[in-house]
Structure formats: C-alpha cells, structure tokens
Image 1 (cartoon, rainbow, N blue to C red):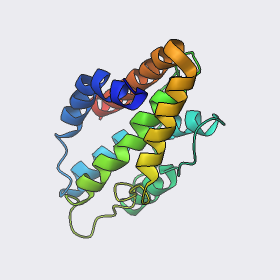
Image 2 (cartoon, one colour):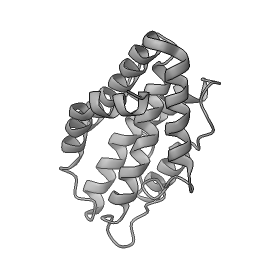
Image 3 (cartoon, rainbow, N blue to C red):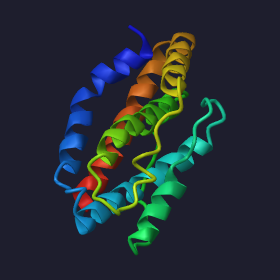
Image 4 (tube, rainbow, N blue to C red):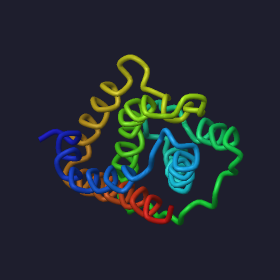
Length: 172
C-alpha cells in the first residue's frame, strides 16, 4: 500500500475527531470564527516551523502569515503556541506535512461558510493546480525509498499533527 493511502486509512479516526472538535465553531459568527482561528493559530505556526526546518519536503507555502492577517483583521493577536515535539524518525516530518497540507483541502470547503465581510485568507489558501497530487506522489516515493521505518515514523508524525490540532480545538 502506498504511503499516502496508508496515512489516509490509519489516521481516518483521528482526522474525524479533529473535524468534530472544530465543527462546533460557527464560521458565520464573528466571535466564533475568531475563536476557531485562534485555535488554529495555537497549532499551525509550530507545525509549520517544524516543516520549515526540514529540507527534504517538497515546495510548500506557509499559511501562518495569512492566519495572522485574518486574526489582525478581527482584532486578535496570534496566541501562544502549543508545545509540540515531532516524533523521531526520517518520515515523521512527512506525516506532519500530510496533516498540515491536507488541511488546505478542508479549508477551501470551510471558507465558503465564513460570514460575509469576515477575512478568509487562511481558509481560502488552496493548493495550486497539481500541487496536492505532486505532494502525494512525493510522499509515496519517499515511503517506497524509506522502507518500513520511514512509514512508521510518518504515521507517528501524522498522529502527532492530528493530536496537536485536537488539543488546540479543545483548548479553545
């Protein structure tokens, strides 16, 4: 099984739990939407900092600046980040990147629910044409080259990423 398919299947329950935790926010309501963005801002910057330190990842575009702009437009500063320790292993950063980059897909859907007049740069930051497919192809190639230890580390990295977002949602 390809790394991308294994990540999707293995993390399905964690992904659903995170989605459920964030579903309580009403994106049409200014205060509720701001609270959701604050929750994301407790997780995204620390995850993207880990990704930025990893030279092996394919090209990706950070969204923390967009999130900070949206929060500023709502009169909110970036909150303190949650502590985060990436699991050990060469594939861990790839698993984390799977979570962070995968969240762009859901963000585009959620952007349609944002209330009129509210900023939505962060949620609207979709993948460019072919970018998600290229990331999945890279993930699968890296998984094949890295072997079982790489896959285990990637699964641990993805689990840590989902746990970070779950913690952020629960703290909001």
